[in-house]
Length: 121
Image 1: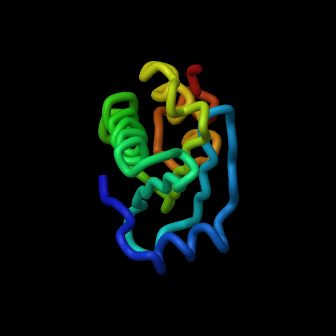
Image 2: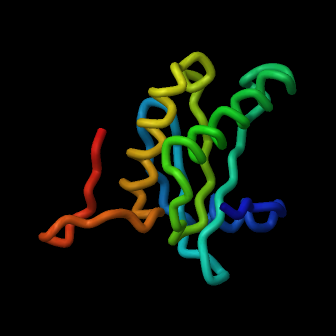
């Protein structure tokens, strides 16, 4: 999993990407500039102190790693957790993140015989 690093990369996705949302996350996705997609997490100051913001960021990244294994990203993605994500159970974070990334078509995932993506909630 590669991470977005510069403010320019984040700004490109936030300005030109398409947004997707559910109860716990807002996701912006855009085709990557390079060969594979990358991921970035933005947690605003409204969440609280730096300790709280960093905890939320770490939980989101861990939900991505654990809940999704090591998926192949096909888009650059910026994940913005909503306030409900701060107190959500880890299992719910994983499910919501998995669902929203597949809705955004940001992951290359398993396909069934009809060619449709296998999305389990």
